[in-house]
Amino acid sequence: MVALQGAAESEPTLVTPWHPVFVAGNWTFPCRITNPCPLYMDCVYNLVLSSGHVITINSLQFITLGHGNDTHPVLAHTFFGTQAVVHAVRQRDSGRGVVGVNGFRRDHAGLVCGFADDEEHLHMHCKAFHSQRQHLQMSQECL
Image (cartoon, rainbow, N blue to C red; front, side, top):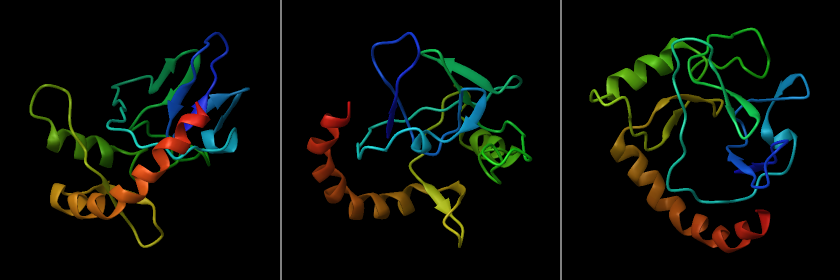
């Protein structure tokens, strides 16, 4: 996670290192602003909007899923930036407008290309759990 300081806020906003943020008139990745800190989170939230595709949290602007911008080098993403993610979210929606995702599938280049099946993620999660727990104490220094 990356702790970003909003202009008017005293508490940092935690965001994943590669989730585009609009800063100083440009879209960039949070990990290019400050170093990520290893931090295990129980939940990470994201949104799908029908229009606008930008949300403001603590005076920081973030792009949302399925935004459709395939020309900007920071925003373009073959899964997160397209209708593919919207379709994947709809497939998991039980009618409440909230879906759970337990991990991601990655292509041969390591880029996210879909949501992982629950069994697939459980196997990956069990392998990674012990190394993530070791980072918890160190992560508190980042906040």
